[in-house]
Length: 220
Image (cartoon, rainbow, N blue to C red; front, side):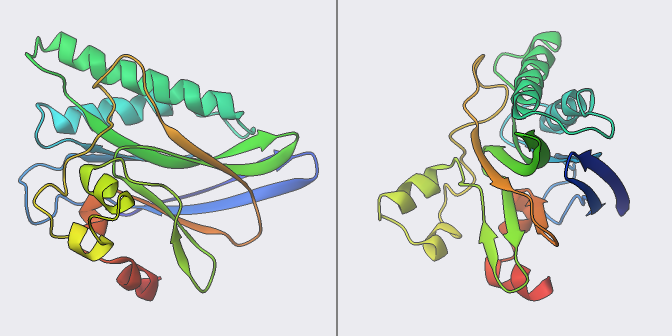
């Protein structure tokens, strides 16, 4: 099912109008959909439950629900509120493992983008933990804003793998950071000024594993 929404957020010098479309699909590999999303107000989040851990579907749902509880209604958020939501999402996933008395942790990746107030000026704050991604489309070129927290990305960074080789590496699904793994989280964040007619894609690796960036750009 396609979910579409829109909103306006007022800043002292401008009103930012947003439109979003969101959809999730179980795909062709698993029988259970472990992805969850939030497109609420000016916050857009995707969580991908980790298939190698128990309760991946519920972990992603708990993470997204924790974000939904903190989304501001029609007013700009501060960057600190987004970090607070990430911490709340991590605690929610840890509690899930405790409630079910699991031997090990359950986990989920999380990524997203939120409109935040920086000195009374609209900015975008992108964030991620794991290998789900945020992309930006500028009308001509698709660029990846986030950096994967994964074993293959570390090999790429060291020059031991090319991005093309990483697509088929046997450990391409192994992440190095996730919600629910530790009490303290270590998200990456990027803050950039909001400009007219910006387009972003927030997605799990269920999309990027099957569609290379060039194909995503062609579809857009």
